[in-house]
Structure formats: structure tokens, C-alpha cells
Image 1 (tube, rainbow, N blue to C red):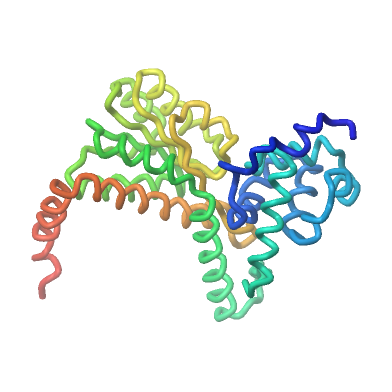
Image 2: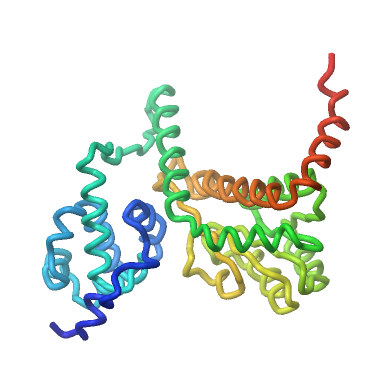
Amino acid sequence: MTQDVKEIFGSASGSTGSTPPAALAAKVRTLAPSMTRSMQRVAETVAADPAGCAALTVTGLAELTGTSEATVVRTARILGYPGYRDLRLALAGLAAQQQSGRAPALTTDIAVDDPIADVVAKLAYDEQQTLADTAAGLDTAQLGAAVTALAAARRTDIYGVGASGLVAQDLTQKLLRIGLIAHAHSDPHLAVTNAVQLKAGDVAIAITHSGSTGDVIEPLRVAFEHGATTVAITGRPDGPVTQYADHILTTSTARESELRPAAMSSRTSQLLVVDCLFIGVAQRTYEQAAPALSASYEALAHRHRR
């Protein structure tokens, strides 16, 4: 072997803190688009045949995928494992889950001539898979820290454009209804000028599936440099936005197709994360949140009466 033994097989301490088996497939779907072609081959191979790959040495997997031992190790680390040994343990666990009766993944590409009933079924499956993948891969420690910051924030600014802008508005509306001060910004100039006013005790949240949306990264950077607590909700945990994020909440998406762009599939996972943040904050601020919710319901009640 050409690599150091510890680097290839991981430390003897095991896989504590590594990506759990249930999250492996989700990680592959989320991170594969940002990997090199050789690393994609490794990631897609282990996700497609966890049982077979769990039986392979690092050299065997490198030969199977036409890559190198170093590429296999780097892929394992990007997927959240200290070394290849830890990845093999996760593959064995995933294989055991699949053998216990878990249904295999379905091919859900939507064709132009699909009957509407098939479109409904395929979209429903993709949405379900996206939510499951996001839940499996979400770092609850990071989520809890973000909730703590939001619950105590003087004010919260949320940045998002396009479909992510709609998600930013959704979170803003939820926070406002429990009595917190929140602003959604889709205009990049307004976002930056408001970010300048943030300071320690404030929170700034950037929502970007690609992790590289400049109009979202710039205000987050400004907020970060002014001392605000920053959060990134992104499908690319290695994207540029994360260098300015104190807390990173990773989302997953269904596989893109011509009729199902990233903006459509990413929205589902972003909304799940937003709902988790909101419920967590509402729990932490219940004495304030409950009366505020009741007051907002009462204020709108007359509009629903006939």
C-alpha cells in the first residue's frame, strides 16, 4: 500500500462521530455533484452495493472503481468518515439494514409523456426520500446550537434568492408569529446594508442549495465580520458559504432531471430544516411564543368567518 496505515484504515478508536450508516446514501446523493469524477465513482459504487464493498480492502475498492487508494480515502473523508475502516463499518451496517427488508431505491425520473398519476407517484416518492435523507444527514448538535442562538437573538436576518428566497420568507413569517424580530432579504443590496447593522447577539441565516450564491454569501460574510452568529442552510457543506457560517445545516435533494430542477427538490429539504428551527425556537421560548401565536390567530380569525 502506498498510503500510511492510519490514514487508510482510520484510527483504532472506531467511528465515533462519523456519519451513521443510515445517512450514507443521503450523503452520496448530496455530495456527489461536487466531487471529482473518480471520487464520484467510489461514492456511487459503495452506495449501490454496500454489502459487496464492505468486503473489499481499500486496494480492492480502488481496483473495482478504477481509482487509487488515496482517492478512496479522500472519498471516505468527504462522506464523513475518519478513514476507510470507518466507511467499511458503515457499509456493513447499511447492508444489514437493507437485508432486513428495507425497500430498494426506485428510479423516479419523470418523462415528458408520463401519465399524471405516475407523475404524482414519482414526485411523492422523491419528496419522501428527500425528507428522509435530510433528516438522516442533519447534524442535531448544529441544529440545537442554531436554535439556541435564534431563541436569544435581538434580531434575525435571513438571506435567500429565487426558490431559497421563498423559504427565507417562510422562516421569517414563522418567527414573527411567535414575537421575534426577523427580516427576509432577497435584494442583495438591501441585504448587505442591513447586515452592516448586525452585531453580537444577532443572527444571520443564509439559505443556498449550491452553497455558492454570491448574493447570499456577501451579506452573510458582512454579518459574520460584524460579530453576528451565522447559520448556513445548504446542500453543499463544502461550499463557499460555509466559511462564514458558525453553524452549518446540510440539506439533501432528490436527483435532478429535466422536469425537476434543483430549485424544486432543494425547497423540500430546506422547508424541513426551517420547520425544525421554528419548532425548536418555539419550544425554547414557549412562554412568549404561545401567547403570540394565539394573538396572531385571533387577529386573523374574522377573515375566516363567513
